[in-house]
Length: 374
Image 1 (cartoon, helix red, strand yellow):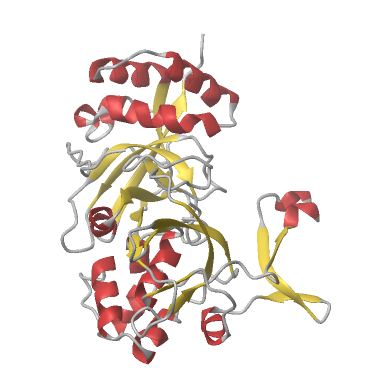
Image 2 (cartoon, rainbow, N blue to C red; image 1 turned 180 degrees about the horizontal axis):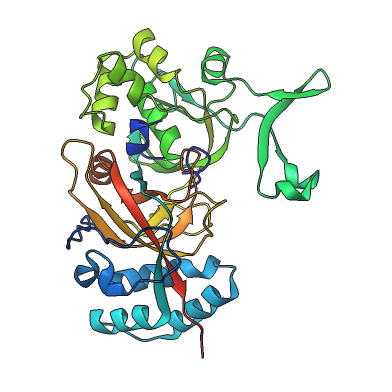
């Protein structure tokens, strides 16, 4: 679900994330070891480790570790999947025997995202006036590693015009252009949020459910609107949550809201698929375990790696005070950049969205490094 580039979060808007109830690990204060130090920690030094749902964490690792490329992590993955542990104590022993925590340098930021469910229509109306567009035929993405091996993992998106490769249209220009065979019609502010999340479910009047899946983006940088809304006095400093932003946009639907949304030049295109009832699929190509999957910067972290989140000091009203848990790197996001940066996937639907929209916490991140296998 590469958001903002496949699968961002309501909370990402503040700068610009399988259980049904939110996990709320608690524990002592933050670890005093300096992040980035070469010395490995003991698990007892991780704030909240003893309160963790270790079996839930191990199950999430089993689900996601198959995408791991590193031989040592792949070996632990095979061992975990062969292990028959079904209780928390056994899961804790497995994790402590097979990993060691190492701090990631610096203090960072935790945000969150979710897979929304929105009403949609197959024809335009005054309320459902925003077309959900498929990927244009003239949108081109170049893999720069084909031209220079040192640029492996780097891509650029644009179009060919007059024999030159140029940037693609920004949000305002795309929205001003005619639409040919839209996939569906949505409320403008809900389409905007669907583009931030990268995928979601559309619910039609006859009860049919259709999955809106990421198909591409216009290559423009993601720019969050929350800061601009705060600076213009549209929202208070401590209430730039996703719910607050969406409510304001809905209340000011029309040219006023359009002007705010167009501050973000990035535009996401979709494809529609049957709804299989599963969680959203991340960049790693597998369904995301709710509450246990994170989007990371792929230039800093590998898919399938296991991390301990120690996030506290929330910046938004109504947020849970802390998120301390294990999570698997299974996704990426256009606004997720840097070492100590993670976006937590909270699940599907309104409750997951309400939680995701309030996550903006200081983060200390710890990579769980595989122990040598005998």
